[in-house]
Length: 426
Image 1 (tube, helix red, strand yellow):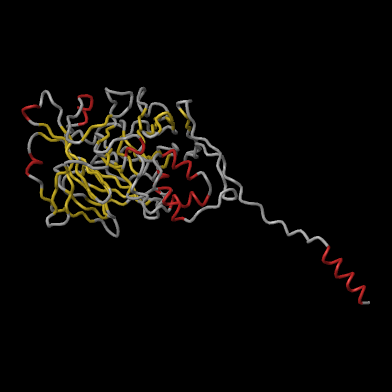
Image 2 (cartoon, helix red, strand yellow; image 1 turned 30 degrees about the vertical axis):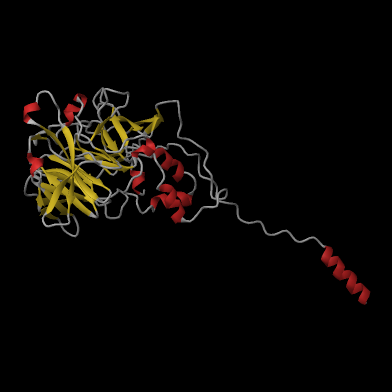
C-alpha cells in the first residue's frame, strides 16, 4: 500500500501541467494611419489626397499589445516635444490610450508646432464648384494636402471667419461650417432674422464637440447665438462699434472693436460686454496705423501694430511692432516689446482669421522673433513670408496693411493660418 501511494505521488509529479485557459485576444491594432474622409451631413463624401507624391502620412500603427503604454504624464511629456501636425497625427494613431492622452494634454492650447497654411482654390470662384483648398505644414513642406468638400447651396455666401478648425460662411438665412481637415459640413438651423443688418463675423466660443460650444454671429445691431445641437438661434441687441477681432485668453473672451477699444465678452449665463480700461503708450500713436492684431502668446496678450511714418508713406510699407498688455497696474497698459525672444507669431490680413504663437520655432525650421504672414514670399518658394519684428515689411506684403472699417470684414476667403479641429482635443 505504501509503495503504491509513493508510485501514485511520483506519477502526479511527473504529469505535465495543464494548459492555461486562453486569454482574450489583444485589442486589434487600429487601421493604418492615413487620411480618412468623414461623412458630410448631406450624405456627400468629402475628398482628400496627398498633393505631393514625395512623401506620405501613412505609416503602420502599433497597438498597445505591442507597446506597453506609459503613464499619461510621460505621454504628455512626449506630446510637448512634437514639432509638427503630422507628428501629432502619428502619435494619435499609435493606439487608443495614446490618442486619449493627446485629447487630455493639459497644454493643448499652448501649441508647440506651427499652424497649417490654408490656400483656397479660387480659380473658378470658391463656391462655383466643390470648394477646394490646400494645407501645407511649415514643418513638413513636402506633405501638402488637397481637400474638397460638398458644394454649399446657395452657392454665393459670405465668408465670416475661421474658428477652431472650421471655415464659417453665411448669407442672411443659412450658415455652413466646413472642417478644414476632413471637409465635413455642419449646417446649423435656419437663421431667423429680419435681414436689416448684414452679418459680418462668425466664431465658435469652444471646440464644436465641447458641451458648451456656441456659434456666434455678429451684425451691426445684433449678436446671434446657436448652441450646438439646438434647433434655434438666440438673438441679442448689440450696441457700440463693430467688433474687429475676438481672442480667448486665460478663460476670457477679449474683443477689439474698430476704434481699437478692448472689451471682454461673456456669453453664458447671459450676454455681457464690458470695456477694459487700457492706457496706450505715446509712441503707439505716432504715424499712420493699420487695424491691429490681437495674439495670445503663452501667458501674454499681445497687440501687433503695423505703422508707417507719414514722411515715408510712398516708399516704405512700414514695420511690425509688438506690445504686451500689462495687467499689473490699473488701468492696464500696452508695453512695447523690443523682441519676441523665443516666440514666433502667425497672423493674416483678415482679422476674422485666427492668430497663433509658437515657442522655439527653430525646432521645425522656423525663426524666433519673426511674424509669419500667409502671403507668398519673393525670396523663396514658400507660400508665406517671415518678417522680423521691427524690420521693414517687404513690398510683397504691402496689402497686409491698411483695411478700413468698411472693408476689413467684407473680404472673401484668402490664405490663412489654421489648426485642424482634432488639435483641440477632438
